[in-house]
Picture 1 (spheres, rainbow, N blue to C red):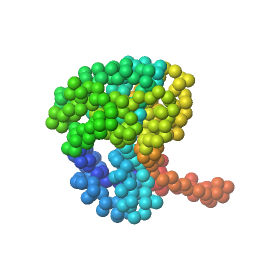
Picture 2 (tube, rainbow, N blue to C red; picture 1 turned 120 degrees about the vertical axis):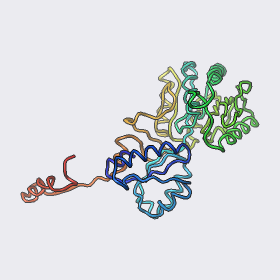
Picture 3 (cartoon, one colour; picture 1 turned 45 degrees about the vertical axis):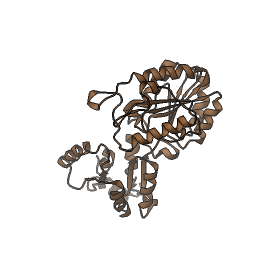
Picture 4 (cartoon, rainbow, N blue to C red; picture 1 turned 180 degrees about the vertical axis):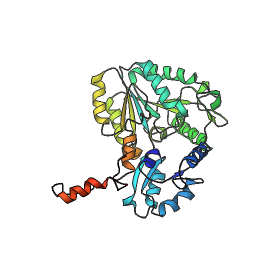
Length: 341
């Protein structure tokens, strides 16, 4: 929003259905600081409020964070979609790969943070772990111990796992777990309440033995279901990345540069960020936050945002023509566009 305003645009901000109240404070701040009409807030169902806005054809740039289906619909609603600049971060199914030489304490801790922080409800979460057979038992044991130690409660109690905000989410997560168990996966922490519900609080479920036939291998859970798939040949990892719709991030856990290099080389054309011995996460705004495939359109960063919300305009003249040069030299004193910032 701020880069759009800096480049002289007016903006319409659709308040999200979940967590929208905090934006009321933002609206008050903008109302006190900016002229009427510069920042406009719209509340209500996106399915009802956004079509008339997009169908007006007056939207030049859309910035969006959410699902790919919603983004596709918004683009199609614009009467001249070729004029619409799209700036979107979408769904992610980021894979964390644990190689045989990995430091398993580091790997398990980073995968814990990547899969359960914010209840796993961020597009940058690690949503699938692929672990080499030779270290899988030890990795899963370490990860289970760390998951079981997570505090559960309410946000103001500073608990690590808190109730889910979407009414339909718990049932969806239960369905993913049930599908995996039916097809042969193991709920490792079942005896520690894994996968159980306490109201809207979903206790993190650690699934081992996940395979490509299971929904959890492909679908973005966006919640605290932690799936581990085992592999014996690195070709299985390459195949999973190649087949995936995800193009956001990946994490590689290893101490061997020779082992990491082939994965990095392959992933450099498949995802927007590769994390080494580090969970997937949002970069500082000074670093490009990009993606490929169904995970992004455009790149998020301060510099990229400024470019996205502006169009370069050049003023040309013949420098060897004295009258034209004299005119150009004086324009910055009378043109608002050419005035120095």
